[in-house]
Image 1 (tube, rainbow, N blue to C red):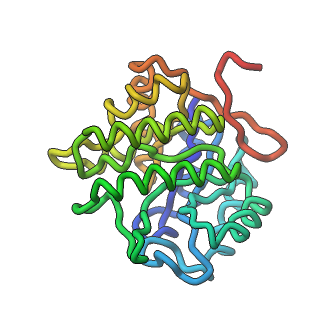
Image 2: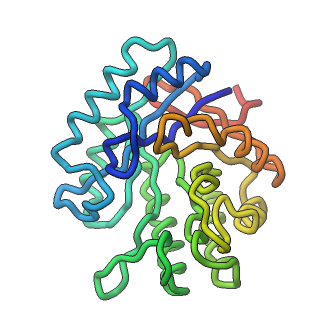
Length: 262
């Protein structure tokens, strides 16, 4: 089954392509399902350098709804959120008006109020622990269809004991809370130099001790990348004995299940 539930566009500011172009490309490739999950802006413009303006949300949502109106397969409206407790009511209201939410930990907040991202050097051992704690906290909200790129904290650092502990914290919580984890294809395209990178074989070896399945996504930020990594990600999951979850429509919302489940 060819699908993608983690799709970005020009709206995020660091991607390209119109919503309609992604939809047309998906149709030409025989997709069965497509979900848009643009990086969600905050009402007060927190992290605004990597998000669309809050005022653009209505345009984005209208674009997605229009794109799906003429296609023979479901097109879903979603967001990828970064979760902080003070915005919990905002995210809950967002989940009520959209089809699905996913989450990625793109920034950890240090005790002094500053933010650090694993995409840049200087992501410390304490930041890795904060990353794992943030991943668990957003999974506990019950809002997610899946947790995106759970291993992105390895983008600029080696896999060591601190990283192993973080992997176990994330994977054990995912199993306990029944939140699928994502094998993310965008890490293949980014490249992380001589560092660990993602999807990380070390992370997924640990994760496979706790979970027996995963969702695969391209995390596309360009139209041409929508299906570029799909086959690799499926094969990658198989290396660790993980079943690839398949999406199905549940009254207009995408859900995930093992292919052998009815």
